[in-house]
Image 1: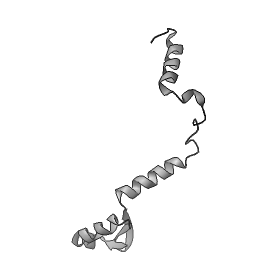
Image 2: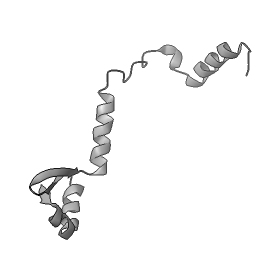
Image 3: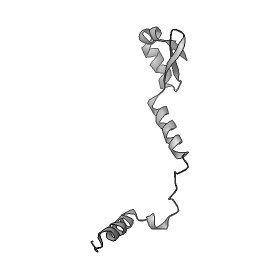
Length: 86
């Protein structure tokens, strides 16, 4: 849906209803697109998908030593301090 800045002021509720239904709204000013409204939930979903598509996502998923994260962190800390803390 495309709306002008003037109609955004006068038809805000109707426009937000469109956004709630998942329809992106392009706001124009003097006939040129200036901004886009999308639902927050749709934006979160898109951000999560972009994050999952990154090449580094899941890079450590096959490392067996990370099955117990607490034990792994203790082991790292033990190596740094040289002491055997519990």
